[in-house]
Image (tube, rainbow, N blue to C red; front, side, top):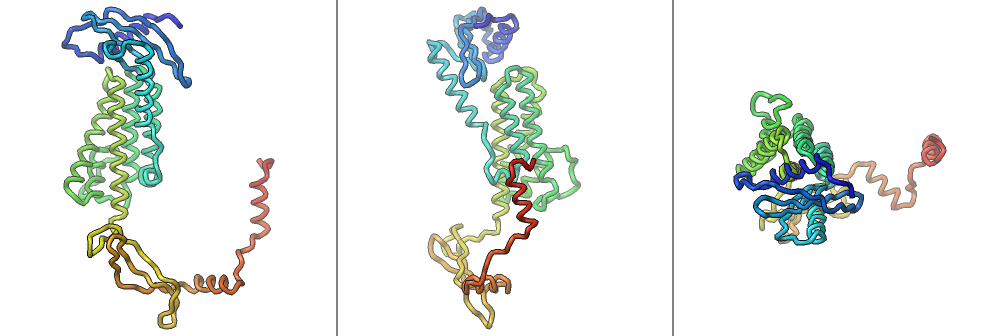
Length: 321
């Protein structure tokens, strides 16, 4: 195990000082590097830290955290707990956006994943500050991607593009139909933006600070995505009998009405069985002809031209590059 350098010792002293109450007056008196473990390609250094009060801490790196030796008496016990804590943190933050998130906030989610990746290798205060910068860019990407969307309602003068707080407030007003949701989205948007700016400039930033900002950013993105989906589906009706949202459109087989062919459509409630009046939807001539051809056995898939076949052969040829 490599010997502990003066810089390394100073960093551990500063870290413990940043994580313990300053008003207590307790100070670090001794730092000893007692072990190094490597798990899944990640290096973890373990330190035994003595305080003037007699309190002792384990400090373990990547992600750096400290643990009371009153609660964890052995290295094996504390290191096992530390690895489990890291797994929970990574699972909490390192997530791939789902289909709805990609559709409604894809670029912002990709930038968020970049912020999580930066957190995974952060060790110093400036690294944690950089997480704040990345989270700030997440919110700016969200604003840039939606400021000109059709659903956005700008009540007065258009804000400057970089005025993220004002744009997020406009998004909240545009996406929500109730006062409570509007206030909630506005509040978390403003507070999340303020947190990212604060972390960016906080010279004593710690791992905990960066985790909090990551969590706030993720929550804002999730809330925005849910409201976008809800806004897009706002036209969905409720059952007039039982108020259920489980109303689906049902269609009949091909029918004839006044010399025209088409389908009878109606809405039906899955919960109580209510049905709306039927409406007739006429089929286009091309669709009807395809059905006739298929039923009589005269339909065949369109033939590919020689040009199409040549293109397909080039794509399949491994030497075409």
